[in-house]
Length: 278
Image (tube, rainbow, N blue to C red):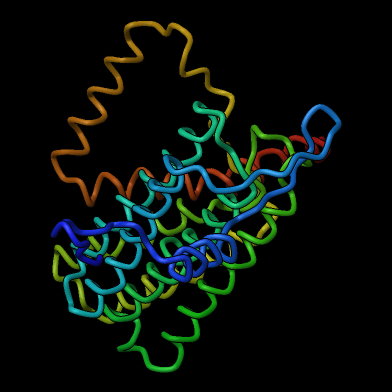
C-alpha cells in the first residue's frame, strides 16, 4: 500500500503483483474432465464440504500416529475411530449434495491409507509389536502393504462389483479391529507374551483378510430415508448404551464379530454347495 497526495492509502495492487497471483492460481487450479449426458465437461476447482470431512479424517489419522509415538495409545485408538466416522461422512455428504468428484475419490483414498493403513500398524507396533523384534515390524508392514493393495483394488473395482458386498475386509473395519484391540488390551495392562502373540495374529490376519476374496456385507442397501419400525430405533439406543458401558471391549466385540462374519459365511456357503452326506 502507498500513501497518496491526500494522505489516503492506495490499496490497488501493482500489475506485477496481480500477474503473480493470477499465475499462482492458474498453475495450482484443479481441472477435472467428466462425461455428463454424453458430453465431456471440464470443471475447475474442488468441492469444499466433502473434502473438509476428508481432511478432518486425515488429521485424525495423523494425530493417531503422533499419539502412538508419544505413548498415548488410548488416545491414538480413539482418534482412529474418529477418522472412521469422518470417512463415512465424507462420502455420504458428497452423495447428498451431489458433489462427487474424481479428486475427492483420490483424496479420500490417500487419507484412508494414512488413517486405516499406516496409523493402526504404527500404533500397534509402538505399543507391543516392537517387543517381538523383526517379526513385529514385518507383520506391521504386511498390514500396511495389504491396506494399500486393498484400497487400490477397491478403486479399480468401483462400478463393477455388487454394491451389497465388499470384496475383502474393508480397511476401516480392519483398522477398527486393530485399534479396539490396542485400546482394550492397553486399558487392562495386558502386556504378557501371550497378548503379544495375539496382537501379532490380529494385525496379520486383518491385513490378509483385506486382500482376500472373502465377501463382507456393505450395509449400502439399507434405506436410511425410509420408515423403520420403532423397535429398530430402540435397538440403536440400547446399542449406544451398551457401548458406553465399556467402549473398548464392546467395540472390539462388535468389529471382531464383523471381521469373523466374512470367513464364517464363506464356509457356510461352501458347505451348502458341497453334496450332503449320504
